[in-house]
Each structure stands twice: as C-alpha cells, then as structure tokens.
Image 1: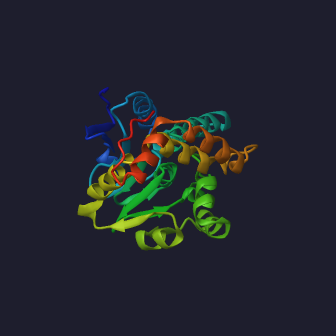
Image 2: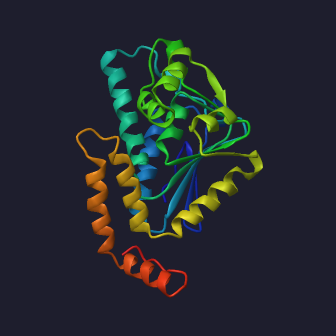
Length: 260
C-alpha cells in the first residue's frame, strides 16, 4: 500500500484500519486528508486482500473535529462549491464501497467529522464521543453531505433541530436517535469494530455488496429501490456463493464463500 502523510494504515486479517493522523489539529480535515482518503479508498476498491475497513482518528480526544477552517479564508463562491463537490465525491466513494466500512468514533465528530462518520456504513462510538453539525456558527451549512445523511439517519425534524441550533450531542443521545449503531467503552472500540467486520466478511461478499447497493438505491433520485432489489436478488441467485450457501444450509455445515 501507499505511504500517506495524514493517514496511518494497517492491514490485518483482511481488515484495513485507516487512522486520520493529525492529532495536534484534532484530526481536522484539510485538502490533503480529503485527497488521501480518496486515494486510500481507491486501494480498498482495488486490493482483493482488503475485505473490510475501519476509519478512526488518532488519539483519545477526536475522531475528526471538523474541517480545517484555516483553509476557508478568502474563498469565493466558486471555490466553496468546488470544495464541497470534492468532499461529496470522496464521501460518496466511501458510502458506495462494496466492502463494509465502519467509523470507529473516538471523541469529537463535528462538522466534516460527523459527515465522514455518516458516510460510513456503520458507526460505533466510544463513550466520550460527541456529534454535531455546527456549521451555521460560521455562516455556512454542511458541505460534505451532512444535510442529507443526517436527515436519512435521524429524520427531518431532529436533523433540522441539530443543523439549525448547532447543538452537540453525546454518544448515548446519538445512539437513541439512530445516528450510531452502538456505544462501547473506549478501550473496546477498535476490537468491537474488528469483530463486526469479521462477522460481515464471513458472509457471501457478493451478497454484502448487493445489500449495500440496494439500501442506498432508496436514497438515489430516479432509482426505484424495489426494482434494484429484484434485479440484484436475481444476480445473487446466479452466483456460485448462492449454490454454496444453500448447499451448506441443507447439509448443516458452515459455508465456504469465494466471492464468485
């Protein structure tokens, strides 16, 4: 794998742990981080040995505390639009990855950090995690998909409240709202995420990819999620993994999936 300046990567037993490594800046997203997230996701897409991904932040205080505001100074409308467009492209690549991606949220997940977590398929939070979209305090709105993904996850009313008040919520509240899947002790965070990845990657990989595609089809303009499900169900039936899975079930043994 490539060496990165703002990311640490560790591949063990098929799980790639991506750590945003700007602890002195609370792992704030700058242009380099966004670019390197794009590049590392290209590796995730193209390296067969990578079966699943965990994204986290360096240190105990912060997952990602937001965007690097110093880069906003002097931006005009065109530059702002280009910045948001780039963030959307990278976060969409995370969201539509055919391999499971989990956000291990340690500490602050604010602004762009909350948006990054929401782009992942699942979010596991440490007890000290904090979530929020405080962009209106700066006179802007979330630019990396926050207005859309937050609404999808917790509903319009509560999303509008958090987006307009800029309130920060703790991990327990985030779990109650459906923003995170589970809250665990900080020392258990990465191991919990690894266990979930291991469980998912023990299933048929083509089926997992089709689940991801089918679910997100619901949120895509001009796409009927039900039609997508029907089409992809048919494609799954044509796979060797389907034959193996059904045979193993009938023979009362553990299936051996090959992603074919």
